[in-house]
Length: 213
Image (tube, rainbow, N blue to C red; front, top):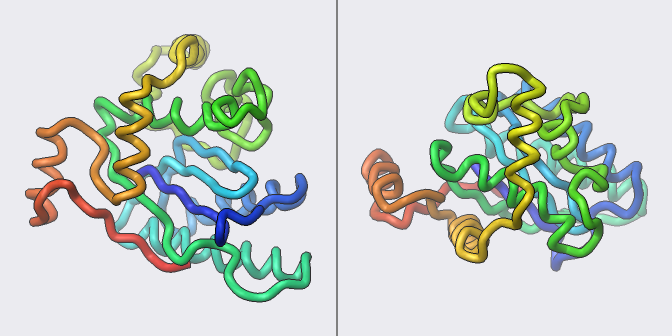
């Protein structure tokens, strides 16, 4: 699932390195606690992207709810505020791993480049790129089978992954990912969307259930 959570009215969520580090630490704790395997993420100033595989139907809602509550308490105490710091609901889309997983990983980790913050994704501290592309230790990340399939050895996988970043994500893929995540649709080809819709007894485009945080 590709998940996006934004600050209220797109307000700043992370004002300094302590804020970024606290949120990343919550991801580390939430993953095993609620049963999600995080494959990629990026923490931007006013929103976050997470690509993860939930191990149960309630894993993602429970994880995001817990992170949202605990992080809001931290921000309110630190900055002497009250209320929720996030939008009422996170946005989420089911991802077709065979076709779109690596594209979604690129989409997520290239966010700081598209935003003009850095020229190279390796220069951005608060994402999973350096772990996926260079093997830097990141307790948040659990490799997806498609990522492992990039090579037999770790070095091969990292080289192959970096090669994927030689070009930008296509405009068509950008639009597809953004529209699907915004609307709660499945990300994938027509057949994949039909199959997911049939499994959920919903007509395509599929809307993904989210939870309040």
